Each structure stands twice: as structure tokens, then as C-alpha cells.
Image (cartoon, rainbow, N blue to C red; front, side, top):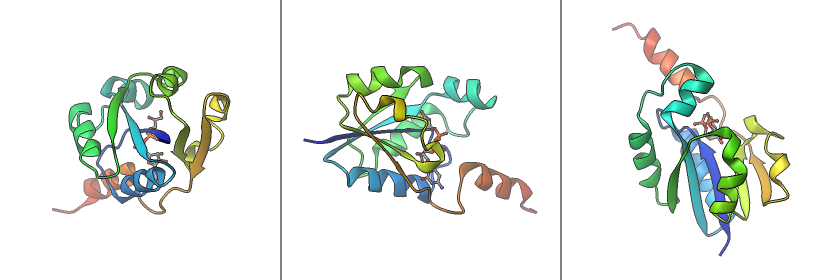
Length: 132
Ligand code: C2G
């Protein structure tokens, strides 16, 4: 059985997230998703996600293509997670291109093209600018 792993925040869940998760699953049989914690997001972006880590994990886990989710608590623990979940391949969107090549001694690393014209921050901006 080929085990695929990917990571992300998956806040304000949108079609770009569905696309990468479905495409990631096509590379194997079992898809594991590390959902970044609220605290990790705060440390990276100085703001908390709109949806809590519990809600984001439940939404990702509800997808057909996802077999298992866990909480990603630190960017520095990638090698530990890859080993702990016996990943054969790490897949990320190409906004992360090259960033995880250092793990290619643990598993294959592959970057898939991002879905164009959609992102959590653009959705938040659009809603903010709505005249209501
Ligand atoms: N993504 C995509 N197309 C978009 C938006 C996002 O393919 N239009 C992909 C990203 O490339 C990433 C995944 O969806 O692989 C999750 O994206 P985010 O929720 O933005 O997660 P991010 O903040 O990149 O967190 O350890 C890494 C982090 O946890 C990744």
C-alpha cells in the first residue's frame, strides 16, 4: 500500500484544497493529512485561522479521498511526521516548490500546480470588501 502525506492549514476550505487533496490521493492508496495547528498559524502569520484546528481537521477528514488526519504542530517536525506515518511520498502545492526537497532521503517529494485564482486570503479580502 502506497502512503501519501501532505500538509496544510485548509482554512476557509475551498476548491483549491479539494483539488490538491484529490490529486494527491491519485498518487497512492492511503492519504494522510497534517493540518496545521492554530498556534503554528499564529506563530507564522500573526493571526489565528478563521476556523479552529478541530473544525479544520473534521472538514478535511470528511472528504472521501482522505484516510487519516493529524495535527501539525511545528514546521520543524516534518521528518518526524514523515517517519511516524511511514510516508512513501510527500505532496505539496508548487507554492512550496523546492522547500521540502531536503526530505527526499526519507520519501519521494512532489509538488503539484496550485489551483489558479483562489486562496483563503483572497476570499477573506473579498468578503471584507463586500458592501452590505
Ligand atoms: N493550494 C492549492 N491551490 C490553491 C490554494 C492552496 O493547490 N489555490 C494547496 C497549497 O499549495 C497547499 C495546500 O493547498 O499544498 C494547503 O494550502 P494552505 O491551506 O494555504 O496551507 P499552507 O499555509 O500552505 O500550510 O507544513 C506546511 C504548512 O502546513 C502548509
